[in-house]
Image (cartoon, rainbow, N blue to C red; front, top):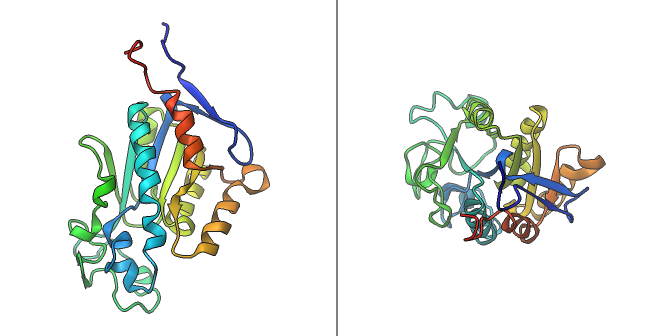
Length: 237
């Protein structure tokens, strides 16, 4: 069987080394780009955070998602949140810290981080297309108590392009989980965000340290340039 376009592409500038993407075995993972975390007046801002630091991720991520879709790379979205009765939210998580509002409390966009509420859903700019996978997760990692592992295995996915928020919490937890399960991960540096600039910097450095202990990193412009090579031309369609 022959193909009119290459199924593989690479990112020479990736850190710590060149990163190869096989279109047949790669997925784009978009972690927790939810209204509760990103919208002004939402839960994230109620904790005293500058949501603008997360919102800066939206534009480059929208561009990356668009190219991934054109290249035929599946896009998988996650949402952190809990059942309305909070039975899947352990007390250790529910009581953590001293915020003005807690998970399950009424917020500006409905009950905070409760499934089915307006704030729990993904921001309009990055809304999933019909048919794209959306994983609802009760924890920080996308593999814990979810069907993600089974979905990736059934699709033959071995490589993840990882994006979303926040870099040092849900992104890091998911990348570490994926690494333990044998997945190759590339974190797209300007498509992940943190409320804390220092955490953003150090969190990204930790991914590719020691020869790529958890994975690779690269900016979206380089990832997009690589993915464009996977987009079928009119002659190959």
